[in-house]
Amino acid sequence: TQLLEQSPQFLSIQEGENLTVYCNSSSVFSSLQWYRQEPGEGPVLLVTVVTGGEVKKLKRLTFQFGDARKDSSLHITAAQPGDTGLYLCAGASNTGKLIFGQGTTLQVKP
Amino acid sequence: NAGVMQNPRHLVRRRGQEARLRCSPMKGHSHVYWYRQLPEEGLKFMVYLQKENIIDESGMPKERFSAEFPKEGPSILRIQQVVRGDSAAYFCASSPLAADRGNEQYFGPGTRLTVT
Image (cartoon, rainbow over all chains, first blue to last red; front, side, top):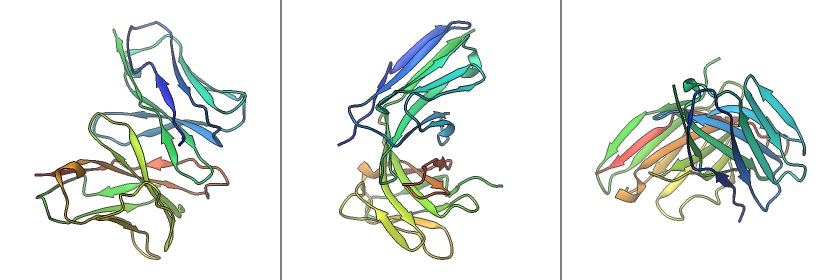
């Protein structure tokens, strides 16, 4: 059974601080996707990483896929209150289904 | 280009009734996935469908749950004889590509099912 461990589960920081969220697995994924989910809504796709070692940037967000395609990280620089939300990582299996981590609830205080 | 659409957004059913959840994928997408998010739990895969075919139903409960994606019309997730434990948010996602050709999935807003 493929599992994806996401940490930390909760994170409360001050505006302007940096943070990193991790997703780790013992399994290899064909790709890994990061989503953000607001209360009462569906997950919104932020980025997909496919190649081992790949790094993608989205404004102040930096996503990295591990060389072995088993782990990933999301780094946010100079967090802002608008970054508050639930962040989810999801690994794609070869059969198509996404395996989700437990999620990281981020609160950025002004 | 409209996103993935799900209806109803909220559904209340009494124990023993049937629940029908609908999902219209994004235009041009022929791959549909259903996920369930139980209270205080993460998203769990249920079933993967292409038009008129079930590709992977390894996450579907063996009884009372079924899914279809007909040639015309939306995908339907059907839950017969609902029980309180079925109360959850059900999300549909669609993708333009097959699983082995890249797998970016776009999610709908979900249907919140409450069983009383």
